[in-house]
Image 1: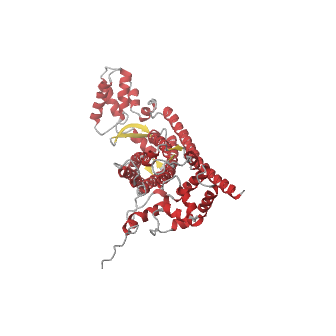
Image 2: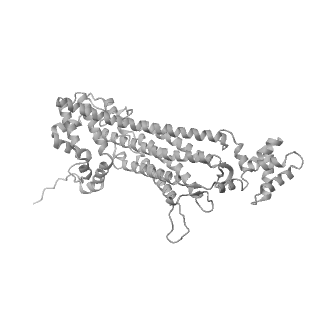
Image 3: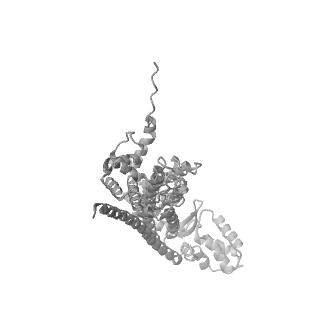
Length: 496
């Protein structure tokens, strides 16, 4: 006799092991607190709007208060529920009953709950990343000020090009970090929008108050269109794009630092606290932390690009591609980026720059000869093309054996009495110190224009630190306000 086919039960073992179990573990790690905040806020809103009786809302809030967070985090996935949302729903129902607990889900969906959680976690990651950058900017500004007159070679095509100062170089990267900060602030403003109330994708017929939950959850406004609140992923793509851009820039900066740490350059020396030795070569001082900075930045960049790849060509609708499996990759990218920045900040805190060696290099290798050509134009009225040709001929004559005095002799010889120019004028034009000092155009390396820019950058750090404090305070105040709303509701029900 043919045996009746056994009805398949959810979840299939392979689906449980490959999808639901890791998703549950990720949800406990990243989303437990945000999900509970949403539960509180939505329940308070239902009571305020008269959609749920206050007595039942109070019972649900007490049930949420009674949850053992540590036990939840330790709970294994056993397949009797689909995800963390349903697991918590069962826990709340065990305290206040299924009928009452079930009313908490009026006028919402896991769709808008998920998007609200994702934005809550992402805004926190953006703030953490922003704060890490503030630390790096502060130490770089201090170094730029200390070395605003420290001569060094500027490089193009990996070849020494012209004299500049270490402060001028560092300010170039500080400005990159300032632009990163602008992008992060703008990204935060678009992330910190409340999708709760969009429900599955078209809102609800219940008279909910989306502005109320916006305030309770610390959002700056609504993600208004309900379809876009669920379907759009640009909030995620933009944040990862900002991260990738920042890591790309930082990787290039660190590459220079690693080059400067070589014996051949000898411009940078990390403190012993940031140097690893060789197990066989006694002389080695390996700047390994800078290599970790570089690889962590590369990891973060690739992870952020991976997020973009996962989202590319997906439907403009609710879909899992942007959800449970993808979100941890976003947070890993931000974690790696923050590790990279904090490590670089620490390594630079105890580093020493060999400014004497840098200054000698700035005066060597024909670096100041652009100013010699400029001086010939300025003093004689000849065209720059002619002056460039004269200086180029002198460089070729000396080949690799640069000598400022010999260069002066050749130029004075080649002027051949056509122009009157003192030896002192020509020789001064071959000074790296003079080269930097006369470049007073805004953005140049001369101390009188560089100094005010460094001071401006210092003020910008203070301004951005204040922005971060205000965002943190806003979130803390929203958290406190929601606790007060809970106490008022339960107090009214208790007759207090």
